[in-house]
Amino acid sequence: MAREANFDGLVGPTHNYGGLSDGNLASARNEGLVSSPRAGVLEGLAKMKRLADSGLVQGLLPPHERPYLPLLRRAGFSGSDSAVIEAAWRSAPGLLRKACSASPMWAANAATVSPSADTKDGRLHFTPANLLTTLHRSIEGEQTKRALDWAFADTGRFAVHDVLPMQPDFADEGAANHVRLCAEQGGEGVEIFVYGRTADEAWSGKFPARQTLEACQAVARSHRLDPKRTVFLRQSPEAIDAGAFHNDVVCVGTRTTLFFHELAFADRDSALEAIRRAADGLFEPDFVEVPQAEVPISDAITSYLFNSQLLEWPGEDRLVLIAPKETEETASTQAYCSAMTVGNGPIGRVEFVEVRQSMRNGGGPACLRLRVVLTDQELAAVTPRALMSDALYPELVAWAERHYREQLGPNDLADPALLVESREALDALTQILELGGGYYPFQRA
Ligand code: SUG
Image 1 (cartoon, helix red, strand yellow):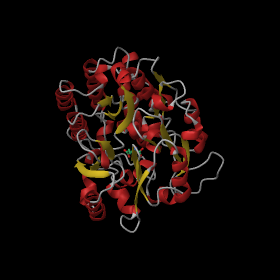
Image 2 (image 1 turned 120 degrees about the horizontal axis):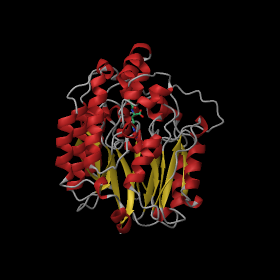
Image 3 (image 1 turned 45 degrees about the vertical axis):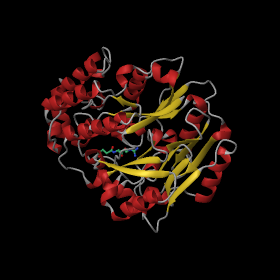
Image 4 (image 1 turned 90 degrees about the vertical axis):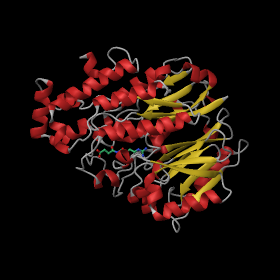
């Protein structure tokens, strides 16, 4: 037996609206707003609890250390930690903001994952994403590898690779540009990699294309995937221009169902044909395509209809879409969801969840989670504290209520007390999750 588990990134204590991501319209629009790290972490925990309570396997990944002093020190700031923060705030406030982003919460960008049923060596493979397009996210890879090494420590069953080379030819954003379809989770599947540009092309889009074909190919090779079952599709430049900075803003798939916007792929017809061909002999794909005439791409992007979790829900025979509240609040997507669920397609129900703190930075329910298909044996090998449980949930809620600020404004990032509080929170989390000594860089210093 195998099932799909979701590993969500815990929202970190410095969650704020830095306006750091070019091409991510929500991030730009909400720059400078006052955030609530506490509300953010509690929203994320409530979503995890909702899924765990339904009988789904729910895991979590710890937040990273922020502010990230090693970045500031490498940029030439020196002295005590508080002197570094003060000086950075004075002469490079933009850099300090980047060193403070809680962006590792978006676990869909943590790594690309290939289940053992798809890989030649029968291990479950992970490649942490290098996220090199944006400076604030390019500092995540190493700590993400550490998190995956902690949660998936059994090297006989799990292979955690290094990030791809930190060079624009290999721009990689992880599972946000990857979809796996299959007949049964435990059986061989089709892995779909979506890229925005190739390494050698002159990119002239309005916004960056964050994933290259070459990065996708490198990941597919190191995961030892069957080329026959692997598909590389180009994202439509139109979608990127409209604000789909990752493919998961316009597409999500589970089992045999691919739910996507009409404008998601550069060449729609050949994209669908390539998927059909790769699935030949395994399953017939169910394409649920949302027409531009019913849901304009601009609505898909503000509502995040596709940045939903498409789940096999215990006890229900059709798939369930866990969508952000904003989908219910946008007329076209609300109407689409109502019509879709009364029909007899593969998606039978839509449930709306509140993840507003993350949404304001362009992160919906699907951004917050990394999907990992696990066999029974692999599940038994996952580090127990990386899995949500009835015991762990209240512990984490109490921890968040104790350590997280209710409000964080843009100028609060300069407060040296924030550094101290964040480290205290991460030290306490190290105990709760049994992360071991020296899990965070500041603990090793
Ligand atoms: O990379 N936002 C993230 C959102 C990631 C969403 N993930 C997926 N689509 N899978 C990003 O653009 C904004 C941070 C700020 O502006 O403070 C940010 O990094």
